[in-house]
Image 1 (cartoon, rainbow, N blue to C red):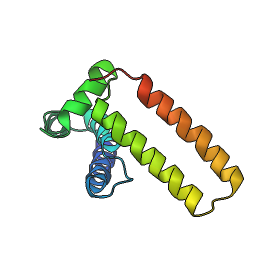
Image 2: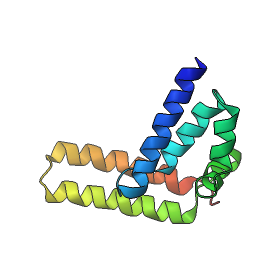
Image 3: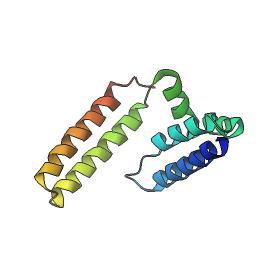
Image 4: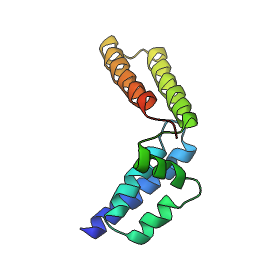
Length: 117
């Protein structure tokens, strides 16, 4: 089972690294998921991830306080708005727009009600 957790952790890190260069793919949620998987599979990989100079602070803040960096909140909000605007511009059906608006509003509500790190 440890190998499965480790494999899922490595896949999550890979997706998170893709999110660094792809603007609409989130990085931090995948790194949080990787930390979860590594905590169940490899102490060495888990320690590497939570002490990483770039990803570690966000992971530790989330694990300790459920907090999100204000800059991250702003980027998430801008990304959500961009996705919604693109959906409007490409002519997505109204039913899908309504579902998307409700879902994205709930995501924004969740993000902005988390404490700041």
